[in-house]
Image (cartoon, one colour):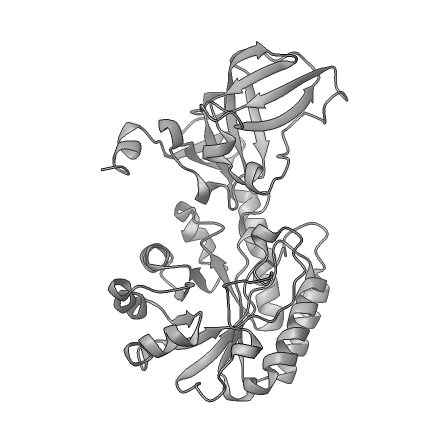
Length: 376
């Protein structure tokens, strides 16, 4: 246990437990008032040292394959719902054994594994409602040529033996209006099948804990759907909503150089530790900074790898930076943590829980063996 950010290892992901609980309380309120089941999407938040907290609020986890399903089974110990674009022969038996729901992405996969799954798990199909409201193609589940889910044109209504549910996922960090649009398309294309189903899964991308999210609108929408289909169990799988604004990545300035402008090199990396800053791209929020030129001192913040483009961005500060200064990159717990790599052999950020203002628990430190063990 340590008592301040200055004492923490660097770099380090810091999850603030009280902020996590606040998000979970809101999600539980939605569950309680609507009767839906909210699952933790491990693809967005897999900090399993917090699962003893999370499982008091949520119904279980959704997994994207065998390893996530095993983590859910071992550490969350509640419902496990598993979907993958394609399952492997050598993994499917174990996935079926530990999963309450298994969702297939195609009729090819359903036909291949139906007999194995029948009677052992609840079988579902992922469908594509063809509602495209996500602006960044990389994150658009229903974009052109999407491989995710079965379109109406390719749906085989005469091949639904043993299928209990339908799953759709069309959103990415969006408000309830996007869900309204996706649900309208879903019902127009597949609503005639719901009478024979036991459950429906609205997927993820529901940014429920964001400050401007229309929670009351969501509750109303879910109640209306449940009233129209009272026989259906309804599931949602928000990933970002659980870890949203629950913590940060703390890094340290290692050096300051100049090439047309001051450049601060940190002990973290956009490429290895926060790849969405390059892939999306998006501008990370950094505590006590502003856009270039607003404050007196502007710096480009770069990562400590050999990749030329390993740049976090340009930021302005009130005071000049110096070697040893701490940089706090906000909102780095959801999605960012699960995407880290050891590119260049760079050290993975430590994992820390902030229990209160004077108590930080270091959950995990990484070292050379974590790098070496991945490669041979």
